[in-house]
Amino acid sequence: MDGRTTLALICALAGGAWLLLAAGVLASRIGSRTRTDLAAIAGEWPLYDEGDRTRSPTGARESETRMLLERGLRSDEQDVRVASITALAGLADRYEWAIDGLVEALASGLESPVRVAAQLDRLAPRPGRRLTPLLGHPSDAVRFIAVRLLARYPTLAGLHVPDLTRDPAPRVRAAALETLRAAHSAEALRCSLQLIGDPQPLVRAHACRTAVAIAGPVTAPYVAPRLADDSWWVREAAREALVGIGRDVALVVEPLLESDDPVLQMGAALVLQDIGPVDDQRGERSSDGELGRIVAAGGRRLHEAAAERARRGVGVDGRTWPLAEASP
Image 1 (tube, rainbow, N blue to C red):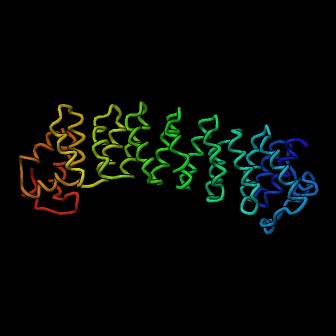
Image 2: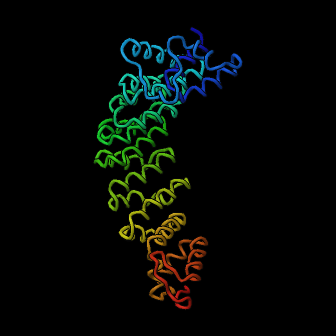
Image 3: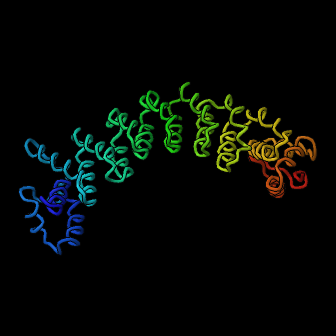
């Protein structure tokens, strides 16, 4: 059976929606074909009409369908592999072996992992435990996808994903941290705090966000130093995470205004600007003291933001002051 015949058979099995794809692909390979010609290629499996798309193989035909689709997954032709994945996704609503086929497609690496992952994600929670063996796959692309898919399964993620925070691939470590946010376990918190000092900025940024998402204010002393990180992405991740904690973080951040590191000073000032103390001080008509320290530490960016807030007379919490009183 050559690739053209296999593709036609798979399209027939996938249902009427694939008739258009079959016609388009085959036309480019073997010239124009009529619907009757395509049915002839498909042999005993006629192409379904749109009204027949809910039909599914049964008995002996089910076994033949499974064999055909498994063969299609291993095809050298991308069109056949894509058609096989789509057909399996359609059959997976009714057949467990179709889910197994999609997991095999992801593990094989012959087709785009993202394309297969989209189908497996749609089928949650049924793939579940089938995904955990993929965490040890030799391809970091497959491990990355498997880790992200497990975000839909907090219990499984809590059991298996912490080990992936030590993966040699930075994107896998970062994905593991993102997945662990939903686990909210002590182990997930421990992993995130350990990776705040990871050599890779991507991982440090995710570690800041995950630690705060799990434990909130208690992680502020660990995240705040990253306001002076060498990477802008990490500094932004730390700032956003600290701002997300709210006013409780001020006790940790305000002392950083006295740091000898101007980058850390600025980061602290920007956090304080976003959580309210700048506007509190302005509302109290204070032109020096705490407000002056924050604005001075924030540099040009904070000066401009303070001037704009004063011009508008609006604070971050929605309070409005007369413009004359709001001027710093």
